Length: 501
Image (cartoon, rainbow, N blue to C red):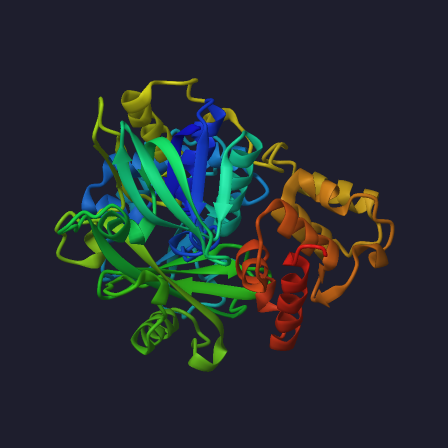
């Protein structure tokens, strides 16, 4: 049987395209070599935002599209996306004059169709609580709205919904080769664990492999002299909570770059990101000593209490595949996406996806489906704007009601545990818990508030294979578990993966 579409890559773009296509009635296969969001899509600053700094580079179309998407995505997944206010401290004589910041924020408030998010306001940092953690150099600040997202969960929820709509999802599957044959693609895949190989036939191939997009073109498709993307490394540090305020900070550095300091997982502060060109295998990206020093030094310019190396509890680093537009600096390279269609008519078409960002992934998928329709025939209509991701079928103002409802149904849960489950699974938290009537019904305890019942759910419903998938992408409980607890979880999952005798 010849499938309509074969998608390479289980990041946000690949999963978003697979979901949109499956919802329109296309037959879809998606192959991910490692795990969902194992690369760039889980290494972001975890923002749904217009990109205030992109205005400086005249990326008005990108910023407007992203601003318009904030409330669309919030309504689509209010469990994993929610509003966040940002405080931008201002110092007279700083890198950007006050009038320029005000102009940028005015545009930010008005060009994106904002309806629910509150507008910008000016803060007196001598009296506002946001001023307490900062040095007294900052008497004034601007406060504006953007959004927060659990990036890895956004990806896996798109994959889950794609599967629910009929897509065939293959995790741990590498594309060995793809060749045009008799008007379709013969895609040879390999199961990474078993080594088993298979040929999948598809009318169209979508290369959404993120920072590996050029490598797929050269290695799997046999193309020579491929250079479409500029790899830019972004690194983050996570430290113990630096401030109690629920708002995040937007810090401007003397070199023109910016970093964020964001409340993270209740007990921590996330600081990042860096921007530097990267060469090598994207899977090997690790934060450098230089980047650690940069983030600590930059944040310490603002906080009364310095950020030191010894404060760091976790770091992560990813490589963004920006379309190579010839920009001289990494931070100036476009964050816009580019779609290139190769082959139509009798020749099996190939769609390459370059660049993009979390905030615009849904619009990117719609644009990709427009190109797919041109190439192999249209099916269905645009549908994702008014949809809900799994567990997100409740109002944007009803999160607390969801938590209260879960606690009433499962009174043995601690309030923080119930809140975490709703944050991850939304209305499906009750489906996960099922008939549980006591904490003992949740099964083996692995540490923190992580129990066997949740692990079984993640393996059965969300393709989790290893402890790393659970601890650092599905739940972020890796910040709480010890190394011994993580090893015990890996052993348990390895045993659970074994087929019954």
